[in-house]
Image (cartoon, rainbow, N blue to C red; front, side):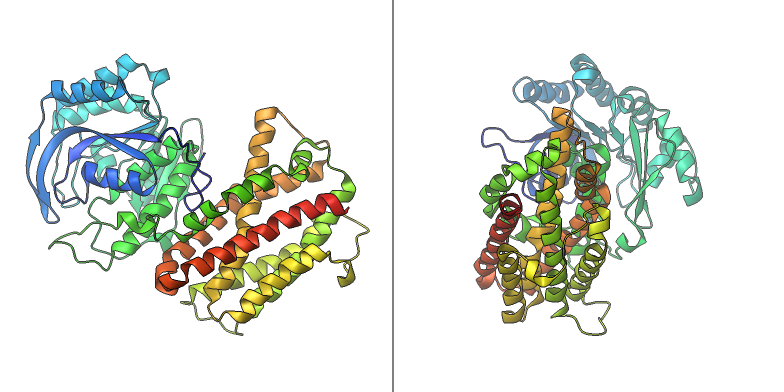
Length: 503
C-alpha cells in the first residue's frame, strides 16, 4: 500500500506495480500514452501500453490521426495480459468504433469481476479543441466501455458531449455527475472547474469536491493535463489506494506538475506539464523516508503499538506516553517559534509551515490530557523523561545552529510523518485482525492519527517541502539533511520505546 504520494513506496523487490494504458500516441510527448508513461514512472509504477492510434500533433494542435487496425489493438492486449499481472488499467483515446468494440470485447472476456481497477478517460477533444474520436465511437464507448469503469474522468466539455448537452454550468455539476453514473460507471470525476473537481461515487448522495480554488494555476502549459491526472489516479489505484484517496493524491500530483511546468517554454502553443517534478532525485521526503525504512520497521514492531491496537497496553504506560507527548509538544512549539517573527509575509511558505506546526502543537498540548482522559499526571518540567529531553534538545540544536528554516522543518517532519503512518498501520492491523480495544481512548488515539483530515494535512505539508527543496537547499548539503532526518527518526524510536519501558 502506498501510504502517501510523498512517502516511501512499499517496493516489493520481486514484483513491479504494473499499470497499463490503452491510448493514442502523442509524438510531442505532452499527452497520450507518453504522458501516461511519464506519470507512471514518476509514481514508481511499471507502465505498459496498448497503442490504439498514432497522431501527428504538437503543442499547437492535432494535424493527423492514423488509427491502428482493431485486430492489432486486441493482439497487443492479449500479448501483455497473457504474460503479466496488471494492477490497474487506464483507457484513453480509442478513436473509432471498431477499436472501442474490440477493447470492450476483450474486457468482457476477461470478466468484470476479474478486472483490476479501470479508469476511463473519455478523450474526445485535444486541449486545442480538436475532436480526436469519431461520433460513432463515442456512442459505443458509452454502451460498451463505461459500464466496466471504476472511475470515469471527463472534463466539463467531454461530460457535455457524453450527455448530449451544450453546456453544464457549475451549479449543475452534481446533477450531471448523477446522470453520468447512470451510464454504469462506479464513480465519476468531472475535472477542471476553477481548480476543483467534482467526484461522485455510486450509492453516495453527495459529491466530494477535490481541491479548491487555490489549486487553480494560471499557466498556458496545460497540454496533457487530463491524461496526466487520470494516469496518476490509475497509478495510485494500482498501488492499492481506495478511490477517494487515489483521486486526492492525483490532484496534488497534477497541481504540482502544472505549477512546476508553468515557467517552461516548450513549443509555440500549450506546452506540457512537468511530469517529473516528483522524480526521485528531487523528492527529498521520498529519499529521506527510504533511508529510515529499517528504523520504521523497528517502530512498528514495538510492543507499545501492538498492545494499543488490541487494548492490552497498561494504562500507566499510555498515561506516561501522553504526559511525555505533552512536554514534547510544548518544546516543539518553542523550536518553531525560534524562527518566527511577529508578522509573517504571506508568501513565505517555510515560515507559514512552521507557524502551522507551532499553532497545532500549542492546541494539542492544551487538550491532550482531556482528549485521552489522562488525569493525575504532573505537568511540572521535572517530570519530563531523559529521552524526551534529549529529543527536544536535539531539535533545539538544529533550530539554533542552522539559519535555514528548511533544516528545522526536516528535523520536525519525522514526528509528523511517523504518527500518521503508525496511526494508519494500527488501523489496518485492527481491521485485518478484527481487533477492537476495550479502552475507548486507545481507539480515539488510533482514530486521531489515522484520520483522512490528518492525512491530507500531512500530504500538503510534504508536497510543499518537496517543491521547495531544490530551490532552498544546495545539493552539497543533501547528506546533512538526511542525517538530520535519520537522527530525529532515531529519537522517535527511542521515544516510543521509552513509553513502554519507563512506566
